Image (cartoon, rainbow over all chains, first blue to last red; front, side, top):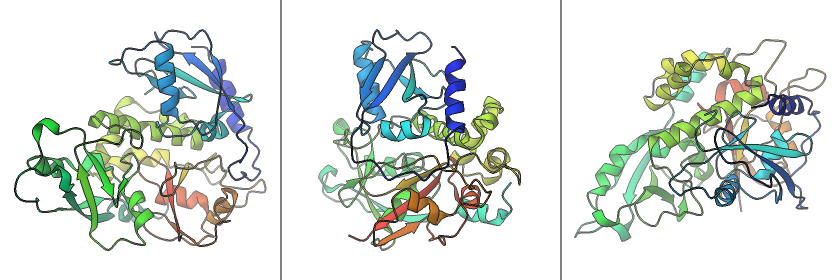
Amino acid sequence: MADTTEQSSQEALESRSPEPISPPPTEKKKIDLLLKAAGDAPIMKKKKWAVEPSKKIGWVTEFIRKYIKCDPSDSLFLYVNQAFSPAPDQEIGTLFDCYGSDGKLILHYCKSQAWG
Amino acid sequence: MADDREILRDIWEGRIPIAFSLSPDEATGMEQPEPYYMLVPRQSYLTLVTDKVQKHFKKYTDDDNTGEVWFEYEGQPIRWHIPVGVIFDLYSHKVTLPWNITIHFQQFPEEELIRCRSKDVIEAHFMSSVKEADCLKHRSQVINGMQKKDHKQLWMGLQNDKFDQFWAINRRLMEHTADEPFKFIPFRICQVDKPCQHSLFRPVTDEGEPVTLGDLLKNAGVAEKLDYKVRIQGIEPPLDTPMQWLSEHLSHPDNFLYISIICDT
């Protein structure tokens, strides 16, 4: 996997200014997701998706499964920062606030445990 | 490294008395089985520590109809993937001990709960949380510098309730120097009926002043609610407690500081 992705998200994490975190926004500005294949997972033709911030990781997982026609018996793992798998009930908006970079949240998907 | 080590052991040894009862709809046979009483570790996960409970009640259910176990309190499914103590604290203002939990084997609430088909799922979830926490604290440097067997030791320490085994490795994840606290504090704000909330939060200001629990709650928009109580590991810490200290001493084994907010509605 290219290293640049990981570096840029780490840099973004570090460059966050310590301004007060505002309360959850009432407007539903969609989050830009970039879905990247890892391991031998098939590459999605369309990788960029705009998703409502209240959508959960579980929903994204199911979405990818359908898109890549994943067999029900196959696993699908999602990773943030090529480091950890968020729990299925975590909201995309929250993950973007913490781990987004360049205005998008990059998620890697894999059929086997790549970084787990 | 945590200076107040005795606290770490006290936290580890926290227990909650729980009375498990089988859902009346699921009991076959003439009698409703007796409740099963257990002291459950605050730091652990319900699906990890209830093998005996499940075995006990399965005897009274219809074999053909027995699916994945799940737990419920007053009609609300309990999120197993959050440590037991955190969930208890959310209800602690209205629970008289023992905490009465209903166990189910049928009609798993797919929309509300995450599946937990094996211990591997719990381990994967736990380790992911540890990794996320270190991503926030140390840019993942400490966790990535460990060997696979060290990661395994964290899990085994939790699973087997072995404080020393766990902390032999965890001490490295809790390390900081006087000059450099954690980059960001791994925390989760939990409330009933809501997904856990977390955000980026530095433990010091630009001027190097320690940031407190009160500051965090204000920034997270919690302080705006009028009547609310804060519980961390079953206690109500003073709002001027530094976040760095809370993170080092009152975090759960997954290295996240869980803050339960109880709103009096």
